[in-house]
Image (cartoon, rainbow, N blue to C red):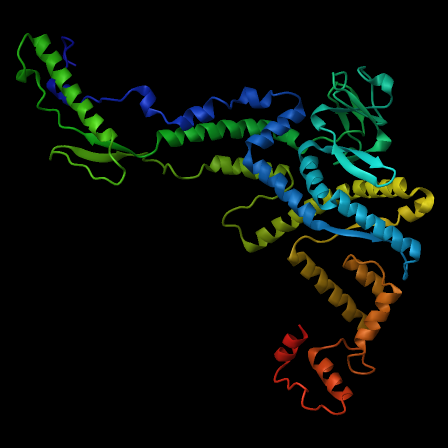
Length: 490
């Protein structure tokens, strides 16, 4: 700018002409910044409604909870009865009825649902709906976002200290208030021992409710939400953009007539019109179409010099690792060694099995309640307590490790009898052998060498069959290899 306030010809030729502000902004900026802000998500309602909003917003937390749920579902291994070597008629009927009930209520899906909500809220309460002819027919989840517990109905709507949850209340003092007796509900607590919590009515509760693991993530999620929005804005701002350098040196005041002010204004208007005309022609260009310009027009790219705009945000990755550790599931880290990944997987399985055991304890109560309602005094309380749900190891590598330990236990018995068959089976999660199973094993072992007690093999079975046939005849197959025999057995 010259001293008299007029721009020189050099300044006119280097002017930058922008499109309107709305045209330079991507819709993604408005889509991210307008609906989501820290105040809306973190102040949506009570603490459990905030947990819901965080899970809905954050895909990483959603994935962590889903993985824990799926692992707990895969750990389910059916119903069994703690019995001796033989199941009597009553125990067989009890087992069959328990299996039908577990299948009807879909305990696999219940395990997954309980694990998901248990990690999110810290507690899950389900109301048992039953029929005298069919037992428990449905498990209704009472929303944790509107759930409280009291010792007696007189405490509803009042300030008091709660020690024993004898009644569960949905939407306390609200228009849709419902009260459920504790005997009709099953409570799955994550860890309510020695825990002092304030409920949704600001009452002090002792050993009633568990603290949600998500509560420790409130400040972290504010940090992540702010970081994600800033990262989106930064990435949008730093996308490589074309820079068209136009030669506007011909639009000088000397090329126009009039007073000095008029010449400068005409030069500026002409330069701006030329730039806008060039910009308008470029708006309809296809991505795969080349440019045709004069020799003085230069097209380059403007991009950040310090970092690549596609580079991942390391700060967000660190926050995600912190979230995974808080929820008890080790994160999947890139460039992780095999040993580290193995240990992380083991800890994740321990977390899932611990949650599955909490769920199984409550579901066993549901199972016994259903059998009690359906069959009445036909089964005693002692018999009902024999009904159990079995869990199994989730990962194949863990099962292989247990089998290796079992092989060592069996081998140790050949040196000095140390472990009983029942102890060995318990290592695999099996109950003691029944008499029918023992008879089946003895019959199976007879295929081996007589008196050695060896397990049958393809060769021993083939040799045994050949010895039992006096005249092979024309129809006796000629096994060229053990594979052929194995294929025929299949």
